[in-house]
Length: 81
Image (cartoon, rainbow, N blue to C red; front, side, top):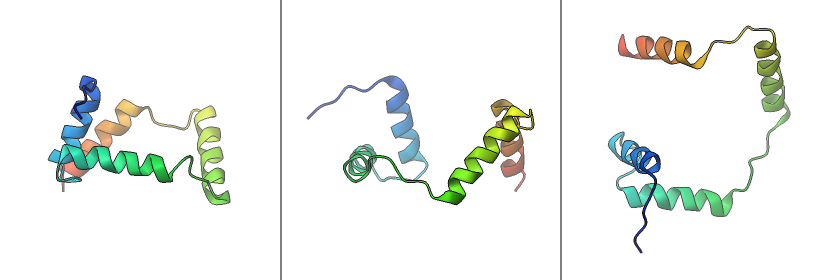
């Protein structure tokens, strides 16, 4: 079978292989399909739901960090190791 993927999907697959998460592009696709077969939606426990609710409340109060700032902070943090 031959598939044509959107460029962003192909890039994601390539990044997963390059990062060493999977040995081949086929392995990435197989893992995704296996998750779909097993999966459906994951059930959240009470602690996870409480954490999500608290995060939403913090965001509503303006206590969050925007994604660009978070990404820059994490990049600096992990590049300085």
